[in-house]
Length: 192
Ligand code: GRF
Image 1 (cartoon, rainbow, N blue to C red):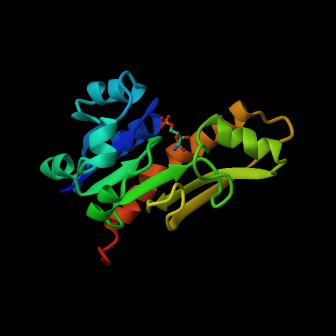
Image 2 (image 1 turned 45 degrees about the horizontal axis):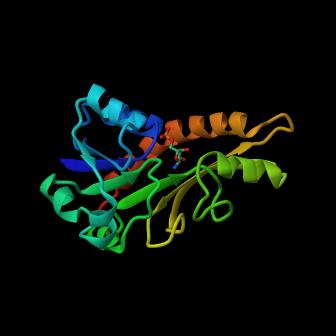
């Protein structure tokens, strides 16, 4: 059984889709929801789905072991970031090489990096007069939104689009593709 931890800081709509996708899956289990924001919507989803949660404190995360000990104890094999707003510390990246993925609501390498999350991304894309945007699923390395890309899907931007309407289109892409791409990565024989 491959055990996934989903890291999230917000509403958790991606986490919910991933949980639904892997419900009753023969070889993959969502074993833990990891969160850094008390009261985040994702915690209610975890409770509804009866999935254990792990709340992160800044100091042990950035200056300690990055919770590697807790994740190992929970039997976690793979980490999925779904709207997790802290940068992943090197301790965690080294403990899970090629085993951490993230989804970014734009077509990287443009519109990525520190501070580029949520509405900021869509506002920048529209302000720049882009004709399309989309999602990027990528492996996580020690730089924000920088690791090896795995999958991208684009959506056209209409003149009438606002950051809100674009965000809604992007969320549809995320919910459609993130669970499937995760499953494909887990099904690949481990090259490492
Ligand atoms: C998504 O837009 C995702 O691309 C970004 O953070 C957002 C998370 O949304 N990384 P939710 O909490 O899954 O609804």
